[in-house]
Length: 252
Image (cartoon, rainbow, N blue to C red; front, side):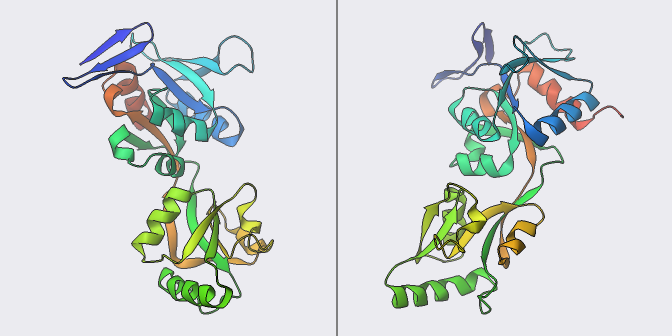
């Protein structure tokens, strides 16, 4: 059962009660924001900012539902984190960030609607000079040889710690350690900060410029922008309508 209060929809069950504000998180800047705005416009909806022109709060105009749905302009990573923490009811962000941020996405998010933009792959890439390394199965042997020779674990530079550990475990690769990337991940091997990387790429041109190659079976996730809705508010009328409108948008 969903009850609505001033501070948001209150989801109730026999075990506990949680409050999730009726807020939609949308990208605050860049191409993701522009494409999101265009997508909503095609569905007959208008994103507006309230208060200052560069404010971080807004509204979504055009919904027929009487349920109020506020908008929070956030970075893509903040949207994923706020969804996990229950600070927003729904959000538009990358599938890669949802999977990386949440240990169990399905336990938090009921609906993930693919929006058809923001395509990019999370991949495993190694130096081109590693001629004998083409697949994940080759990495464990290389990692063992590396440890025997250098007396330390092979390093993997990445911003995707959870996805990396899960994927490597699935492929039986254990003799490595992750190094959190603070900047341009693809430059880590050339800078001597890591031996290989896990990163996101859309065209592969940056990898080639840094003389890196993607392993043949090294695609961890094919990501794109998603509309994600938390489980306990999935039946909120405004969110149900939003999903329906985005699934059957108006013609341009």
